[in-house]
Image (cartoon, rainbow, N blue to C red; front, side, top):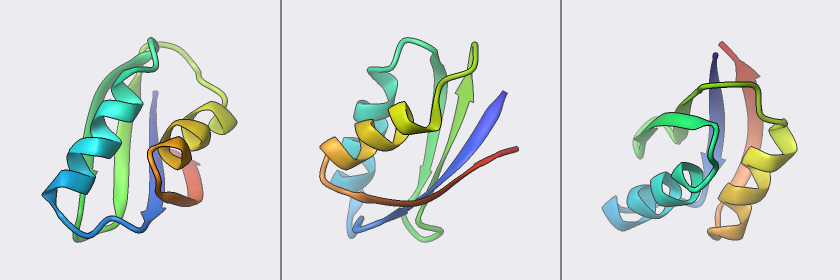
Length: 71
């Protein structure tokens, strides 16, 4: 399963790494691809994770989640 997380507030490569690291701490996240230009992260999940859990991880890292879509 993949989900696309729309993120506001990223401005540099450090921000991208910060978001990647926050999402990778969730055990069910198999892989993360973050696009600074597109303002999103694509997460591949080994099993379903509540959107609220993904949102919390990103927001705890200091960024705003505007939308989460299942792909």
